[in-house]
Length: 132
Image (tube, rainbow, N blue to C red; front, side):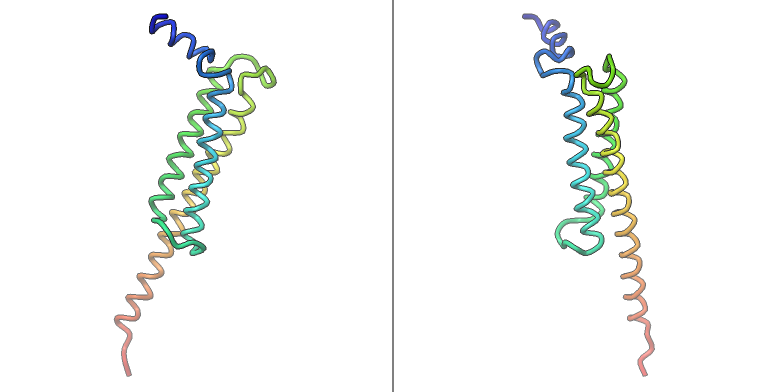
């Protein structure tokens, strides 16, 4: 079998899986993005104390963007409609998951910046407080 034949079969879903493979990939990435976003938000609100909030928030937003892009690409290239077995419903479900991951990452990023500014302000006030 030549390389062209292998790529053709893989693009049709024969070697990798059925038409749901792209949607399942987008769903998996979306779930990972929501988990990362939730952990970032939990870190920003002080419920857990491990990791860097900004890094997790940026990762959640990036993974959410990848999920939404994969799902939209799958919807654009799939043929047929919902219920035909080509993964359209999975891709439709993956789009809100990606958006939710991006929203959670954004909320965590905003909350961490607000918390840092408040902590800096209180520290600054303690330094310059008159002693009497």
